[in-house]
Length: 161
Image (cartoon, rainbow, N blue to C red; front, side, top):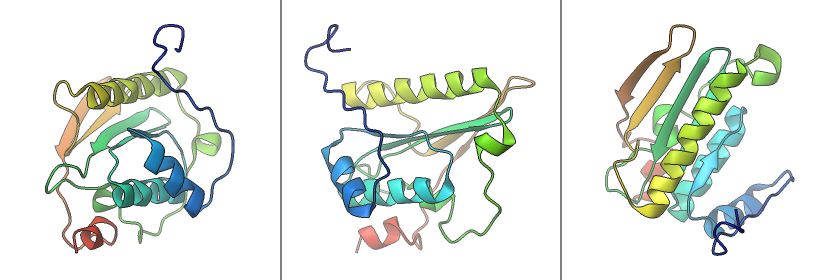
């Protein structure tokens, strides 16, 4: 990437980060991409993005189902990840490592995340902010829904006060 564009800064990190380190990493980012398969990690990344005012491009894939959205709180009234998926939800964690994922799905969702991140950085087009796109790959069916901000959200509802 640096051979193509010497102004790009790539930092490949392989570390488990605590809250303080996560806050610092998010603060130094232009856009954050969440490609994790762990609900608590997704919530922690979202909370850091809200706290630091950074846009979040969230993608998930399991079995034959994928989803992608942008949570960009720089826009007034925008939702965060916790508005859509409450951090208080209790459910059995299902990860790709145990449930499996159809490999091409990861490529599709990942490519879309890259496109959304590049659009945000370049300031072009309309992002997925406020929309959740879902893909059911067995039948190649796309659907989408609007994502509204929850004024009682325990993450971004507090950020506005």
